Image (cartoon, rainbow, N blue to C red; front, side, top):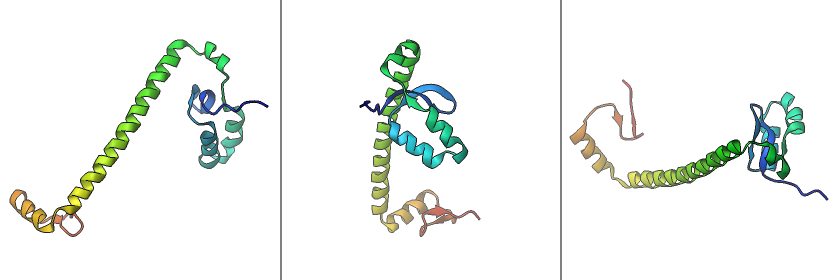
Length: 126
């Protein structure tokens, strides 16, 4: 029985990149089936595959190293994005806890415009 490879360098994972890293073969196949135009699906599914380990010798080391750096940077970005979303959630919760009285007093002292709608929390464009 042939072992199924779930991730690695692949060929024809995307239409505009010959060789690239695929994190999850099954997820990519599902994406092709659900999100790509119907007239492209059969060809995409037929051509897309995870490359065997021996194919790495034919992928330039410089390309592999650049791809590895990109994947590491992308992972860090995702981690930072998760932290950013959590921090924003905390910020939104803290804002909700501010009293309307305090918001009105702050606004009156520092702005006082008529365009701010305290009910919706948005500017009205007049």
